[in-house]
Length: 280
Image (tube, rainbow, N blue to C red; front, side, top):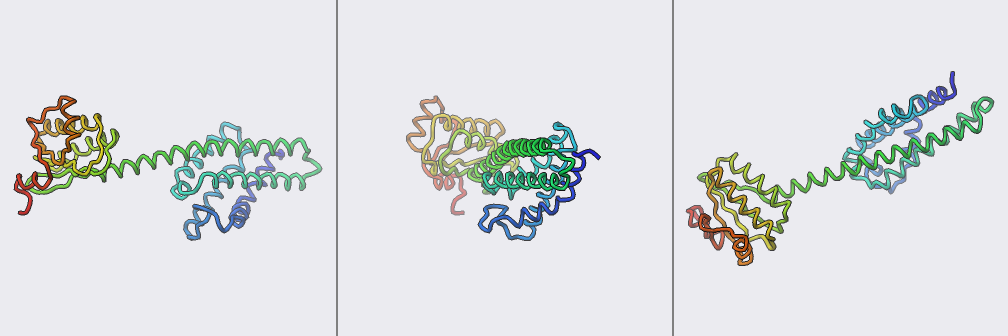
């Protein structure tokens, strides 16, 4: 039996021991997933760690390309795992290197058991392979983790934006879009898409857009709002605006936007009252 095959089998025999030793050595003040005392979280963490060892033990049993290709699924799963996304990446990387030390110790153990047949040069080469392997896995994990964190952040931002520009269904095929807070170009774009979809979905014939809760608005956003009005008009939905401040009106005029086909009211209550929806 080749020495690397023997080392691979030795590693495989130790996988659960490595996991239990690793978990037992975690500090009490660990952050994120490592500090959880929830039995289900702990069980999942140990299983993930054990799967790491099952994969990593084949480092001496596969070619480099095959080894990392097979390892990629584990890397991606952990990088996208919610518990690990909630854990500081510095803590995760620290655990990778603590695991690396476990393998360096295992190599020494194996060498001492086979000191008559294993040379110092072979031990050094194996250790170098382990260090290089862990380094590559850390790099791959860091990339996947950053990508997953960005996707999660974007999804949360998208949800916040959607919730901050809801189309409220009133009555008689009428809806209300109350805009609150600062509107940047991205939020205006999402608002445009969502409002058109929701208004069409609910079969609205009129939509009130109230701008009284918007403290600051720039030229691009004003343009986007009036593009929304045009889009609504194209699908047969009439629009009424309320809460337009002088600066918004000036920006609209500067852009050459005409108000002649748009119903404009000073307040939302006035708009609703005029349309016989308030107080009745």
